[in-house]
Length: 142
Image 1 (tube, rainbow, N blue to C red):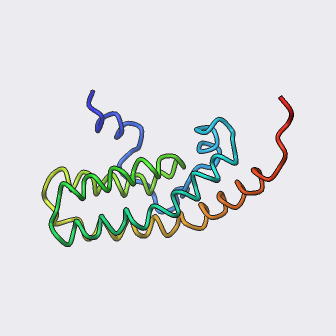
Image 2: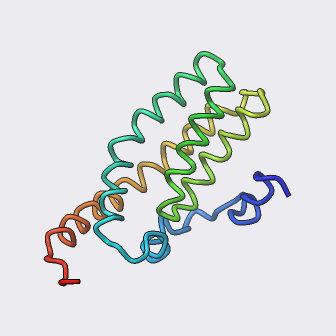
Image 3: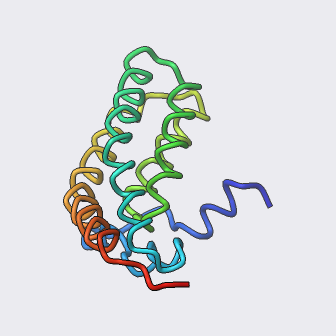
């Protein structure tokens, strides 16, 4: 089974408008319950995603399907750390558009990704802040 089919089976192609923006419990589970680590990953995502989104926009404007595919794939993987299904699916749609080399649907797909990132941003900020609190707590002696 190729990677796309595996990914599609894990992340269904359509999400209802009321779908959860991210799954905090799932994201925490992915980092072994380490809230400080999750907070740090959230801070990094918040710093990095604007540049990736700019690369996606630029690739669309230039008609650079290969760059669109690469940047969308990178953003998809980063969003998956938070079990952010709607954002992951929006990025995956752009990745597929880039892979197909048919960019006629790219503008609409970018708008969807932007909307999902906008919904995700406040929750990531909250995770980043909670991670700071967790990181400030003394660790038990080993």
